Amino acid sequence: MDRQQIGRDAEQRALNYLKQKGLKLISRNYHCRFGEIDLIMQDGGQLVFIEVRSRRHTLWGGAGLSVDFRKQKKLIKTASYFLSQQKSSNLPVCRFDVIAFEANRENGSGDSCPIWYKDAFRPEATF
Image (cartoon, rainbow, N blue to C red; front, top):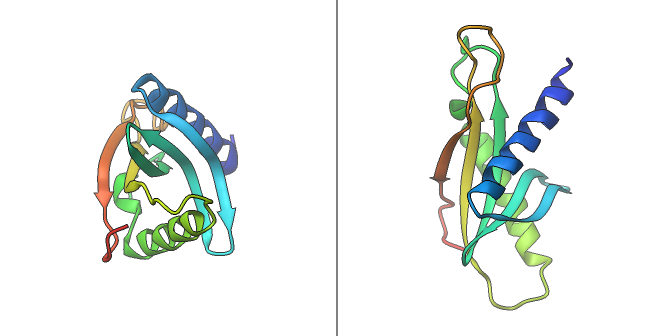
């Protein structure tokens, strides 16, 4: 299986998991000139921007750790652009989550249960 297919599978598994937890899908694979956000969902009154990561091995750190400062800045900029395109003048409370699928030590795959990092990082200025 190629990397893109692994990523799509991880996103689908994350989406299914989050729907089971009561979140509602707003957008999937939102693209703009600043980057991409894997999932945008609603959790009660909060708008949640979600990065999904999967790792087959932990040689360079786990899936959760791969959302470094540079990636966080890109996600924040993309989320800001998404919000600027919304018709409503009332901005919702927002947060950034990460769903990580870590390598399965037994078979080397990323088929583990998702690890949900709620409110994984925050922008310097609050939304």
